[in-house]
Image (cartoon, rainbow, N blue to C red; front, side, top):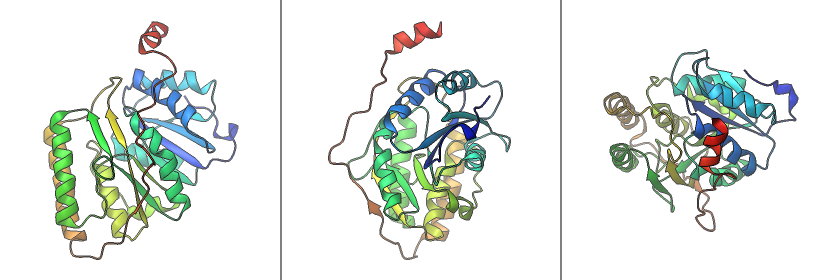
Length: 276
């Protein structure tokens, strides 16, 4: 199910991709990451079940590129447990949490890395500030996300403009300090990470992204009721623990221009023919 980690050189960046039957999305994302990453890297595809259809894609691509390997999440279902399993298996100095169904944020990876190299401990992407944008995905989910982040930034005093986004990069040795406790519902753990990174005094950074959600399909985990309840729980937690406390400046790195999302080096129709 996975290639040997000893088959690659020293790793600077570990990219974690929590997946659930991502299919076409995963194959395209892995090809894009291979083309985009210029530092020594590894890509860890973390799945909850040995029946996940992503495993076949991982095994096929790992035969050609040993930097790609699969990780079975044995800590329980959900993104939070996938992240914990992935970090435990990671070898890089830095860890990037990435969604397999988003293409646009790939172009921000270099800027996120640069902020860590300049002294940041935790870097978050932003869809709502510094020129960032969000396209696609659930209309209801998008509206709730934009509203919640605006209110949380103003009411709770969150230093980050987009605390809920799942695209995060951090120093691996800082991970345990955050003591993550979110329930395995959606990407609520990303919200928790933003608050706890600020709360424990990590040096924060932010990079704008163009988020193109679920461009190539895949299985969405968005469920309005459970997501609202869990995010509201952390919203209240943040107000209690962050409001009124001094907020340190966030280092922002803005690209010279906002590039368009990279396109895969093959057509979707071609991929489907190869799949058949």
